Image 1 (cartoon, rainbow, N blue to C red):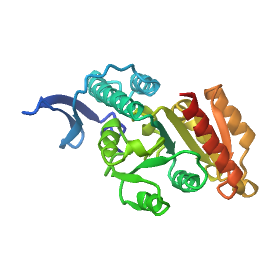
Image 2 (spheres, rainbow, N blue to C red; image 1 turned 90 degrees about the vertical axis):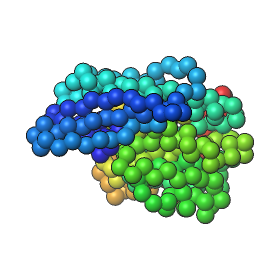
Image 3 (cartoon, rainbow, N blue to C red; image 1 turned 180 degrees about the vertical axis):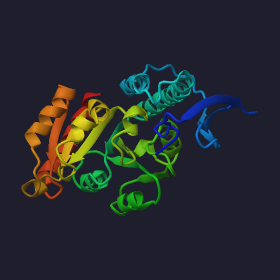
Image 4 (tube, rainbow, N blue to C red; image 1 turned 30 degrees about the horizontal axis):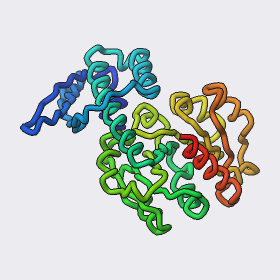
Length: 292
């Protein structure tokens, strides 16, 4: 998994980092990863950061990430925590800038997160014929432009980010993609994150809302196993409900689990073959947009 967020760091590794400033005043944080058993050394580039001068508050995602760092014995090393905290601080700063950029253009930004295959792209395709708002999409995948191409074929403005080895989008990637979308022509911008129920929850990309999808075929335990993700959700979509007759899936129990983690979370059931369920998602987003 990705070294940027620290999820590849184990007890057998020691990490330290330092920052360089180039002739343009841009900072580069480099993380050095030492494997104590194998004796190998790798040099990983960190995030490119530029200062826009916006103040920001720590996000809930950032706080959750700090909690994990301090309670995970494999990451409970002062230097490791210092480096990862610095990365998160820079990301939060850039996320605040992205959010301000969306605000300046009157655009509601929505972060879509889920496991791979839960139906994020298909949902967006269906919304194209239903949504009472204009929307574009920033797509995140490790490789290929397939999802962006699918959306463009439906007439949806889309920009593809290929993350390589990174298992999540971050605010810097989204910032770069924003230059390829005409925000003045949009009411809503979806950020379709990399399929992953872990790391995307800890990285604020500058969205106003988080929507998390979980599908019936994934089984009954995903919400309980990945609480950080579902605590970050403003809306949980339980997708592929047309498959309920074929799976031992207790949908009411899963709704209770989601509300145990976040009592005020909204939950909708989605059957991609049922236009009424797609319309309910579109109406929820439209309502949130009108309330801003």
